[in-house]
Image 1 (spheres, helix red, strand yellow):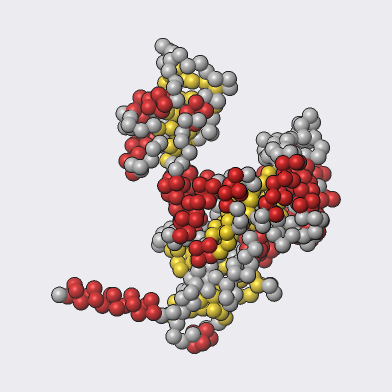
Image 2: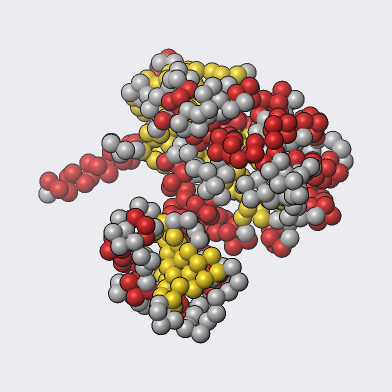
Length: 551
Ligand SMILES: [Zn+2]
């Protein structure tokens, strides 16, 4: 009887909480940017509809006397951060595969594989990465038989820590058609025992024999990987992400997750290319599923990456005088896709790394936009090395520079080797772009970089790596102020998605997307910005993450 009464009592309590429409979070040190600059507050009121009612001081407690009052315990509030360029499916795939990094022995690796297979009964393939036999007591390559003991009814494929070798069980070798007679493919090697029998480890191009047989993820698998990725991203204080390259099945999964109320953060989709996927979607989908999903942009490409010398340069590489890199798409294809995207009302987001790649992207946008700014606010993704004379074109054409601050500090030594001391003046040139009137939207390019936005804010403000090098910062005059860096990760990222009317700041009528963190972004030494920990993440007035004590 007592138990029943307790149950009824708690149901009544739930009902009364639900009926209490508004919330005032008070006793916080909060900040938001607005159209008029930085505003601080000690209380935030938001409605049951998930929108901000007001920011202010303790006076909000009397102004909203009927609201629920939540003590913020003196902690720190920022607007939810938005990553303007990340790869959600790549993150999800990492999270649904087994991480063997640091495994101390073959036995430990085998135990992990067995446990992972058991925990993922629906996985058609058991995949993972990160093993390194050099760390094991017996420093020999493992074998297929080592896995067969624990998993022999499903294929297993584990990449080595450097990505240059893979470890298969016998079922995988069979599926890949590898037997004693299979020759080593060019650029690859099938490890064999003294009798010529394939042992289960494949090197470099031989890995393709397996990887070409792994089926693309089905929609259930995509959905599961998105769930895990989104859960990981909201932990980091991200309330929005611009997903830079989404296939048709992936877009369909997003739509169905939005239908089911499963998107705990706001996703802005860049469709992959302007081919079939764009034909299938047809016209932009905006503010879908309670404003959680926009499919309104297209990812296009000029060149490749700087590290592998795939970035297209106007003059040869400083460290490879015969090489100017290469364009992934030619000018005609880029222009056709840019025009098609824009004509259908999709924002064009063009990947460009080298100065020739950036010039081609700007040329294509200039042509497709008729030489003037477009209401679509088209974007150049990365804008890493830009010829100085091209920098003003971003502002002139209203083209957003979608940049990743952590790339500068990860790439700095390599980048200067590649392009030399003169061209680097237009490299990661945030200050020059801002001074020219351009808008910078910031992101991380996860999984290339860590998705933690505080690492990006730290890199933007310090131009130093996490060890504080170089002292004083790399071309420190290009650093952003803390206000500019926060702007790039909030309002400017919202602007880059045409959503600054509803997202990116804590102002009346906008979504109550905010985070509670453990220290004051504006008051701590810049060297601590990368140490900021997210305690809670709220999206549309609902808490989607709370840190455990001791996290
Ligand atoms: Zn990317």
